[in-house]
Length: 95
Image (tube, rainbow, N blue to C red; front, side):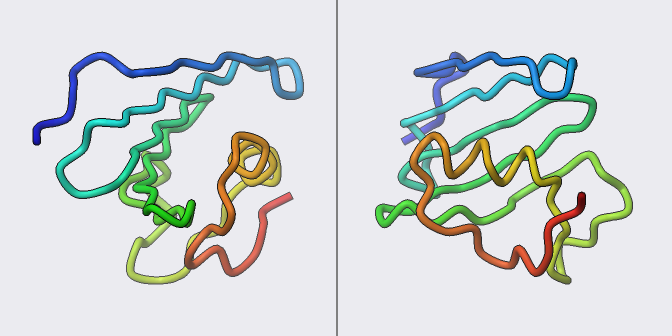
């Protein structure tokens, strides 16, 4: 199954005065769901059937996906707020 070019759901919010957008895709060939989050940077997560998120791609050049990434606290709170049960490889939260 190919991923739809249009998200199935879009959430927008202001976080610390900056606009943040979450796009949720339920049609993905590799994951149960895929979530893309954009603020001043971009993060893409693959979500399995258990609600566990795996970071697939990020625009943050400092993050090396081979090591455990540091995710901003607002991003972690956003993911848990939309129902993610766990974030794989999130060693520490960047404040």
